[in-house]
Amino acid sequence: MSLRQIASKLIKSGRNDCLRKKLDKEGISIPSISSDLTTKKLEQETLDVLYPLDQPLQLSASSLTDFYRNEYLYFLRYVLRLEEQESVRPDARSHGNFLHRIFERVMTDQEGDFDSKLSRAIMETRNEEGFQALYTNDADSQFSEDMLLDIARATALVLRYDSVIRVIEDEAVFGKDNDNLLILENGRAVNIKGKIDRLDTIQSDGALGVVDYKSSSKTFKLDQFYNGLSPQLLTYIAAIKNHPEYSQAEKVFGAMYLHMLDPIVKLKDTKGADMALAEAYKSLVYKGLFLEEESNRLNQLYYKTKASLFTEAELAVLLDYNQHLYEQASKKILSGSFAINPYTEDGKSVAGQQLKAITGFEANLHMGQARHLVKGGKKEEWLARMKDKEVNQENPENFDQKGGKYDI
Image (cartoon, rainbow, N blue to C red; front, side, top):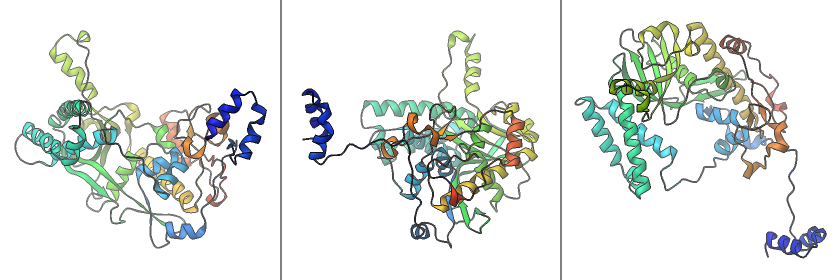
């Protein structure tokens, strides 16, 4: 008889006070929810196997983000190497891969006009065995493919009409051969690896820029970056500055997200087809961070605001702080200490992944263990914080395993 059946039987019989005695007799214990979630530091023997002294620690923008979302999330994914069960149906990840593959083919195809290249890219991608299995399975999956193809054709307009830049590399890989190293104070090496969707250059002066395709809306926000939750664009800029082939470039004009979407325009709010097209283009723009000195060379496809423009000196501050984020995370990881500390923005609710099924984290009981994000401030104030590096400089060996409530 199951625990639920025993409990139900006792409750119905009105003998609730006998429940625990009955369970004890059956050899069943009810796990209690503790108000104190602790983790155990990894043994040195385990650390020696995981992180040999003669090999660099491997990190990426995504693994760093996971660490700052919740250290225990990093532990599960990159130490225990647990993986989510793959779906046999199309999901957000497969949708993103599908669109990425189309644009990769478009930008590397050197034959014919743009429409021909796009048509070939779509056909070749649809015919890939993996995508065929996903998107021809049933009517729902076929509808998903139709929606993705509409998105691909709409987003392609940005690529077609951008005469300012020239694409010089797609799927630019860095750190593959441990060649993007960061050396910590104790001499340990960290290799930062990743793949840039697209590397562009401004045709007029040779300045470089990086583009990351996104299947959902994404912008660069200083508060997110400061708290370790958005290191991707700065990681990419640092990578091309360190890359032997591109390090001689005088400037980096920006790092951008391109949201792949099929814009929806309300015709009642427009006065004609031309205006409708103009409204659609407002959504099909690059968003991210741009070098102020280069911004006048970029056209309307680049969404430039005061908050997204940075001087050379300010960009240097961002890059230095990005390195700092990697250093702080690396020290904690190499110490073998991983706290259960999803982040909170308001001190009342948890935004980071709680991993409740594994950790037992409950916001109403364990909020004290959540990492409280630094909030508020103008652009100048965020940059000043980054210069000062207002962080807890404690030795990672002494971090409190009950929460790890360090401020970045």
